[in-house]
Image (cartoon, rainbow, N blue to C red; front, side, top):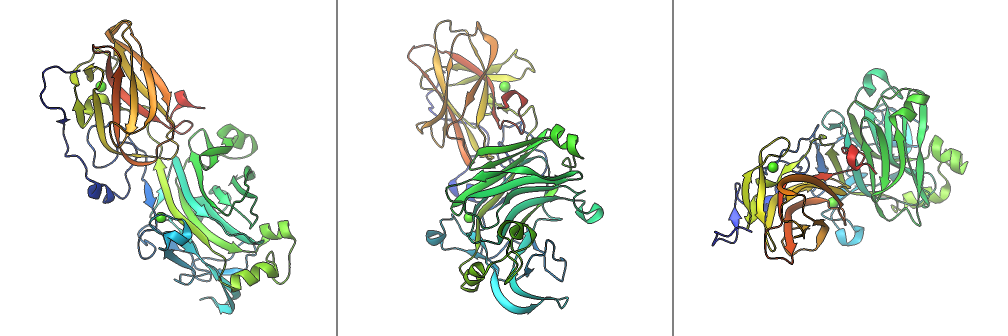
Length: 449
Ligand SMILES: [Ca+2]
Ligand SMILES: [Ca+2]
């Protein structure tokens, strides 16, 4: 605690972001992203956040693939992809959809005899969009919150292709399937394709896959891990891929969202060839009734952060009862000092990526048996703690130790971060040099779980 202050709050640096200011930040790079001072966290590559809150698809982020235009049908699928508000639009009826701030809807239609720009005839239209050329993403987390339709032969997908697809073709470009489903309500699938590697992946089983779920992949140089609702269900290592074929997953990939109808994979499952290949009459009836669509609440890309990612504690935007002093810790710089019971610091809004599950704190304490706790809270100093770590004497005020802790619940989105300090003893009990938020597997070998 700092003794010589009459000011309870010390505002340091940038003016605190207001709620309205936060809403103007569309896509921060990562923890410590744009608009905040006092961070040393580095990102690799661009980020994406699209919650489909506009009146129509944001064409600065996405483009359409059109059958008979810039796309030729694969896998014997039965739909023509079109660029039309009939088949792709934003649904703003959140009460009905269960989305927040709008949802992308891909809504296939039964249109017997539809002719593509190239003159081919199809009986169904649907949509397929991609971030190709405008959003090409490297290591990091890609995720989407989606609601799938039930119905044999429906084949929605959230996936990614290597940016050299146009030059080297498939599968040499590499493909990452983050979510695929063929109308079965009991599972979704994820996997990778690469030269010599076909469909290496796994299935996530559900009580009902047609509810809202978050589908995610984490990409790193070491491997690719798949998650549903933050639960990892399949991890594919680089070594595993290289034992079978070629690892082609060090380059950026672009995202795709689409809803195919019928085709070879549904057919291999339902054996249906009539009335359409891979698409039974019961599903045709539901499409014709307008009852089939995929909803996407949001899509997020959070780049992997560097291994040395840290937030210097002394860069806190707000300090209460806390001083700053030079540190003799590795790397030098400064640290927060004279911290006692009731003190706190805060860092202005930071964007957490999916599955930020861990944290490290660099602390020193010359308080002997005087101990206390450091709590991490989001939004305010009295908010519920998402982590609390106990600090004992480390042998001196510049005798530094790194503590690790889990975050529960795992934070996502934009938050002001508070560190609060609690002790049942009267004196100062800890100094803090830096903190680091970690996402195991992606960016944190130490924290890998
Ligand atoms: Ca949304
Ligand atoms: Ca520091």
